[in-house]
Image (cartoon, rainbow, N blue to C red):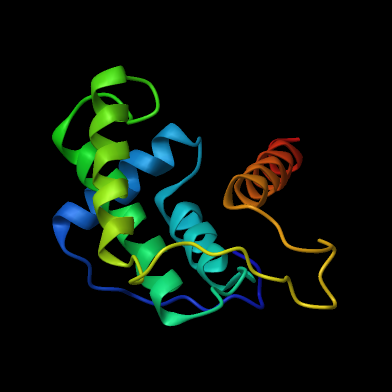
Amino acid sequence: MRKADTQTSLRLPTSLLDRVAAAAAANGRSTGAEIRRRLEQSFASKPAAPDQETTELITATVRIASLLSEWFPDAWHSDPFLYRAFRLALDKLLTHYAPDGHPTPLLPKPDGFIGGKVSVAAVSAMLFAIAVSDLREARQ
């Protein structure tokens, strides 16, 4: 331990400590190092959601994926059955937030990089391409 570090004791439920210890072993770290890494990670800058509904949607999406991981041995993205269940749950979740009315082409903000009226399909394709590109960069 570095001299600048402070030693402290922390009361945790046994089940939580067991999960942290398992994660530590899987990551080749001590339990203390795993706790420190996770605490540091929780303070790392994260992109803020633009509004409360988006924050709720992100939280609910993570919860759905976590529940599937608790209930089944495989991840949602590695099993066709779980993928379909995850996708349907997300669809229902998005429907919960659906505004009334029909989609009408909008003019983007003047400072945006999209010019003129655009279709839902065009905006969707652009968002998907940007998201996939961001994911690829993050994995490198």
